[in-house]
Amino acid sequence: MSVLALTLSLLLLQQPPTYRVDAQFVKVPVTVLDTEGKALLGLEKSDFRLFDEGESRPIENFVLDKSPVHVLFLLDASRSVQDEIQEIRWATLRFAQTFDRDDRIAVIGFSDTIEVLQDWTDDLDDVRKSLKKLKPGYRTALYDALSATTKERLQKLPGKKVIILLTDGLDNESNTSFREVMNQLIATNTVLYIVSRTKLIRDQVAEDDRVEFLNRVMKNVLKEEGSFVDAYFKVKETSMKQLAGANGGRVFFPDKLPALGQSYLQIARELKSQYVLTFRAPENAEKKFRRILVECLRDVGQVYYREIYLAP
Image 1 (tube, rainbow, N blue to C red):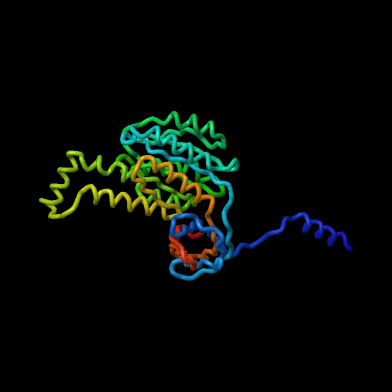
Image 2 (cartoon, rainbow, N blue to C red):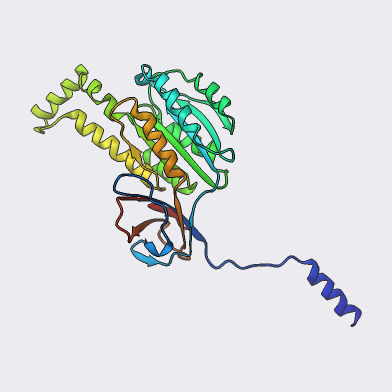
């Protein structure tokens, strides 16, 4: 072999191999519940169909997701929760106890300000101590808190990441919009579960003198029947369902205070029983925020899945 040929061979051996990626894959977390609301295991890839903007897509990969998870507890500490602080602490700690040593937990409280009570940890004693620092504030900057925690705590994290939000959903202080929060959750692949207190506080809000005045305005001026409170809460609950549904989470509406803990435990069970479907995203898609439809071909109760993704 000539010196030139030998030199070229050595150079080629030293260069790392290169690969051309023709398409990017989209991961779709899917939770399947039976008719009694329990997570349904034992399903296979052939039990599902997936559509991207109405077009059928082959499912490239299918697994039961047992990977470690980063769980961020985002706790509404506005003035309306001051009588429930102890129950919130207990429910959150009980939820944290269900996770594995490979998982990581953070705790953040918010009202009109945001306070990091505990950064990422796998130590339950850290979580327990942090919850003692949760104090009621005043107003509710819900969207600001979701935006800040997504960008500052979750955006750069790899793998599975989840926000567990406890709130009444009545944002009255934020500068961040609903659409901005939605886009951030989608872009960072952050799953949002919400435990909503709307049913717990509805009667209390309805008794407010200002609400009675607004009911009279609806009836006498706007000529609309019904309750202002019902209309107002319907809008807020719809917004929460849209935020949670974007990446495969959902909203729980406990009607009694002790049911907060039951909602948390249900979320924990679902997180450890999720499937992940993977499909190829279309190349050079004109529409960037794209809608997904997942169908389960088995006779089941409910199917929750990521509904929107950001095309590459």
